[in-house]
Image (cartoon, rainbow, N blue to C red; front, side):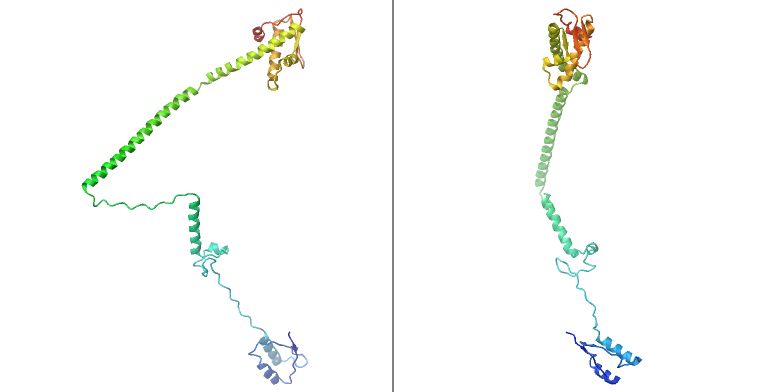
Length: 280
């Protein structure tokens, strides 16, 4: 705990003698000089300044610890530390960083399944071969080349035959646009004819029995699915208008939401033939 002490001296000689002993030691006491015991003379001010400077602790510059590599512990400097790593404060020397990159590259190569090149065997020297041995080696090489050529020719022959077969199949499969149109028409015409015939039969029976036939009644009698309803309504309407156009004295069509064919003839009158109605 610091203690505050006040000293009084009669003369300057006593003051100097007392504080002469404190210059070599670190002062642990704080000395205060009262204004009434000393006048503001230059000598007194100089003595006061000397005492205050001697009592201040001397601050020593702080030494920074050297930066070391986190892997090997070597001190890092401009020679063994990359500038980019120094900027990011990555504490690793050049040699440790390069070793790490090599290990990572090798590990990636194994993970990706890359095949490492096998060391090639040194070629055998043929300096000591006899003429017979050289001739035998030349024969073996000729045989290998002949086998390779034969294999290539057989492969090319098989490829050519396969190409010819593909061309034949593609020619059979391909059809001209006209052939496609005629085939599609032939497929559509029977179904369309059947629809006309079924609608004609229902309209004819209703005219024969009731002397009238409407689009709605014919569709209900045919039991048409929803996806074909619109097409069948068009077929029935075409039949009604065709009959009225063919025989205007016997038939008339009332237009509206539900077009109806009326028969003006006696009961039991039938419709004109289907082919004549479709021709109108």
